[in-house]
Image 1 (cartoon, helix red, strand yellow):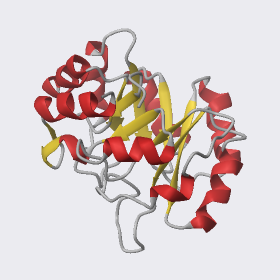
Image 2: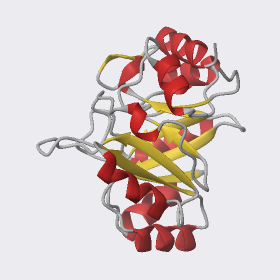
Image 3: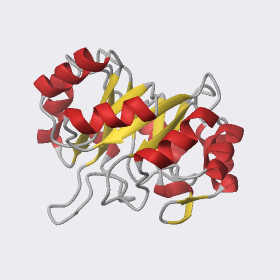
Image 4: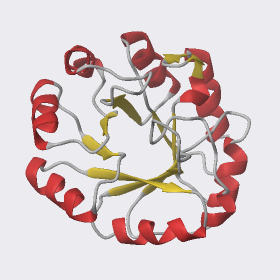
Amino acid sequence: MPTDTRVKICGLRDQAGIDGAVAAGANYVGFVFFPKSPRHVTIEQAAALVPHVPVGVAKVGLFVNPDNAQLDATLDAAPLDIIQLHGSESPERVTEVRARYGLPVMKAIGIADESDLTAIDVYAQVADQLLVDTKPSKNADRPGGNGDAFDWTLIAKRRWAVPWMLAGGLTQDNVAQAIATTGAQQIDLSSGVETAPGVKSAKLMQDFIAAARA
């Protein structure tokens, strides 16, 4: 198993969470700009937190079907390194966001069965990175962060033209199997290192990243 697995801790809401993620060795830290999420941060909160992320750790903003006004206001107040689009944004919208802001765009794609894999190939043509996540159930009110895993064998050893991350229901107990099954070199998680929704544990983050790189 690779010892250089890159890890993104998403849904950080306070300085302690950022410090814990960085100390554990996270390569990316994610801020959720989606009000329905228990991990949501306001623009003002993010503006106070972003300057404390050390150089070398990428700051990712998660947005769900954002309009330009939301992106303008957020990026003006809280400079980010990567825009993560986690809604139903079209390939054309991904291209538009990349061009407008000059930042890398990571597009999340939900997977439930083999029919969902086509979208990965489509978005690999326009996004800088992909995030392969569990497709939410029809009655879910959030597009991610629900703590559910999908059938990893659907993407076993598949490769795309751009870097990608595996997400969805990952914990320190299953991350080694997830990496072995999929060949993922990047991992994204949120609920798997929490003691309560939106409350990150420094120990769980440390244990998870150690397990991912074991």
